[in-house]
Length: 639
Image 1 (cartoon, one colour):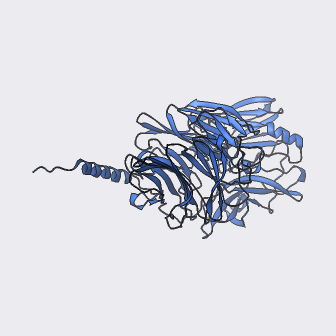
Image 2: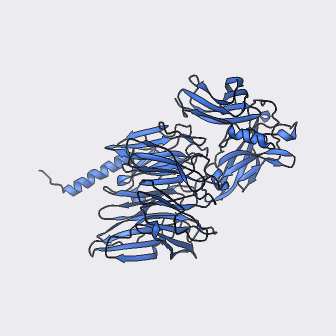
Image 3: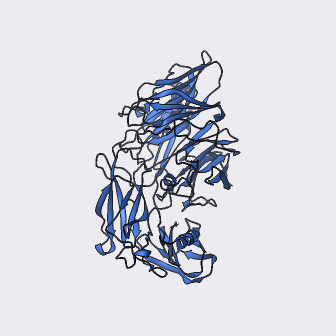
């Protein structure tokens, strides 16, 4: 006997079988992949026939946990009514959000004044961030005060656009400004730090852009930008398949740097540190026909290499279509990982290998987190409960529904990631001491303290706890930075520091990267210098008391290309003064691999080749010594 099965039921069963098969492919689980476990953020319109889309952002409003603000464009098709709703929901800390609190409610007869984005940013001298909404016709500012979001405080008609972001652009301060694009122009509105934005843009650029990002390229994000107002965010944008890079002149102007054709239409772009060195790499995703693409372009000490991607992945299966990017350290090993989410909620997680080769081609986790025919319009990875676990927030829409959902981390209460550290030096009385700079850009919410560890050559290289601090700097007053005379002693570091981050439940991270110094008993207090040949920020030898030496040090340049390389690379160096030049290569343990040159060189530009054919893949350091100056840089060999 033949049984007739309803086609809708047959298709539904088939879809569920596919989703079950795909969702079970990956063994590692960083997010809860069960659709039934997703938490939906309550919205205003639940009636059948109501469709729309939502933009969101998260920041503490009524507690110290990140609450969520929703900017909703809704169409109640039964009565052809268009609604524009601004709401916020309290994060109750147990995986749910409260009912919506309304701060804006508009009922329109036509489809206009749509929301296009929302950003929380500090507009006032207070701990909480205010809310900036972008609409088709204007920018709106809403304050975050008294445990709520206020009605509109400022309207900027000149702020009409379709994409909004924030970044430290204005050279006169270090606050985040608001930048928008209408497709043909990018406008930057200055943060006045009094609860308002300047009503006219401080900069307008004729840049065609679908999306763009404001972040550091030439310097270390999280170190220099926060302390040096003359070092502002650069800009990377895309339109179609064209990626364009503009460097900030630090005078509220952008200077075109480079552009390239990716060979596919981009759907998202991001600048994020993937090597744990403070320098942001360029990440792009997109599609061409049935294939979807990921590319990563390396940033070596402020030099963004665009000739070819350091990582490239093409797949119609493992990379979502219409992918969006979010970057977080999902496995808390100190290296940022990559999460992509796209059509039908296909979400792929690529875990950073931490060796300069970035990611595998097969994601460590892959799941469909939304139902068939749904589009994902925005994503954000975030520690929702201040416990360390990174969850995913996504907005979605389809022909019958829309909203925002939360996918929690599989483990919520986890140790913090290791901090990003940089080596420096400081004079304390008559002596120069090692100074450790600790960046707080990991975003750990339940931070308690940092623990400082030290290992020395004459003590068997065992790391011992030597101190604790809640500050972003630590000075070791027990060590003297060794005198360097002539052309330098050329010896590798004999003292290393590493740092742990500890959270409020006394869970400690793994050790950070090491910072190496040459220490000893000083024989001359006037020329003590630091040498850091490993770590996030490589400290150069220079005479602190000599303006001439400082000037020469700024003009001494060395870099290599390509980087990463396999198996050869060319080292380029420029000398401001003639003299004996020594260039050496070390491994991460400080062992000398090879002396490339040790000879007299004239003023000007020079090159030397390095062949790593007999070496294993990994990170290496090359060091130039000349005229009492030492510069150390990092290079990555990939095989």
